[in-house]
Image 1 (cartoon, rainbow, N blue to C red):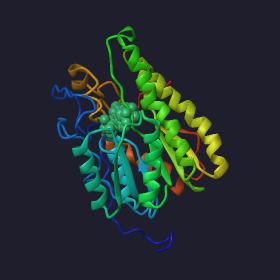
Image 2: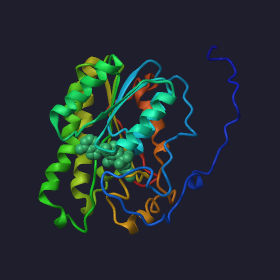
Image 3: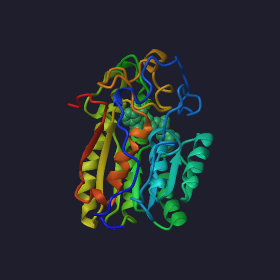
Image 4: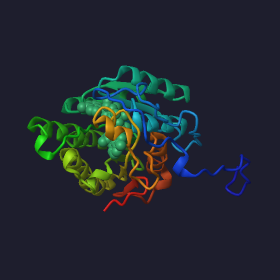
Length: 302
Ligand code: NAD
């Protein structure tokens, strides 16, 4: 088929994005960190029914951190349907990890599931090595895993948790990226999950917000370093996304109204994030590095 051939597919059906997915009020719900997908009401959409691949990442190998659930699961699923083999990490949610593995394999790709704690430096380097050993290489690193915890005020944030969140959310990005750069070929890429909180920090999430701002700063330095070997580095800054992170870190009232303050009056589903990660990893993004892509539901970022 040449670029000029007529594509024979069904006509695209346009939908109003405001009511394409559930809107608040959601049912009141509460979970322990790190949260489980199946306990969410409604269960998030990772693109199981909707994501159609077209070979954009065929034959490539990817490592997606935090791939058992939420944004990471949607990215793992989309990468697999685009033809990539996928290794993914997770902290402890074995049931969620088993489902992501099943979805990747169902797409005809190889899946490697790695249970690890990325607050541990050696665990970060080992995860890179396992991906290389078991998938035969590494072309794409998605630094996505992270956590948050909200408090009434900044003064309530426990001192120990401040160090802990920096270790989980940003120090690990250094170790995983350093490890990855030893293997990533020219044309490979790194994608870092930041947050709208990098631009709009709030006192109840002050420590989390600071790690997300650090991720953006790190993305720029890493982009300048990595291009010396032809590797691109970008960040994605999501707004509210319906994932297990939300009922396990916010009070029930906040969960019930989650995403209602966006222009769409609803949160994103993980499936709505994945196409941006596909684009950034694909050769089609050949002139894109050091950028931050917002997927915020229209909220002003600055
Ligand atoms: P999620 O709960 O589905 O995913 C979080 C992942 O991080 C899980 O897979 C968990 O196992 C992993 N993780 C947490 N601590 C870890 C540790 N110490 N070691 C290894 N893995 C660890 O939630 P999500 O919303 O999909 O989160 C993914 C990313 O998106 C996070 O970086 C989060 O900050 C970011 N984000 C989420 C939202 C949102 O509204 N959900 C908004 C902006 C940014």
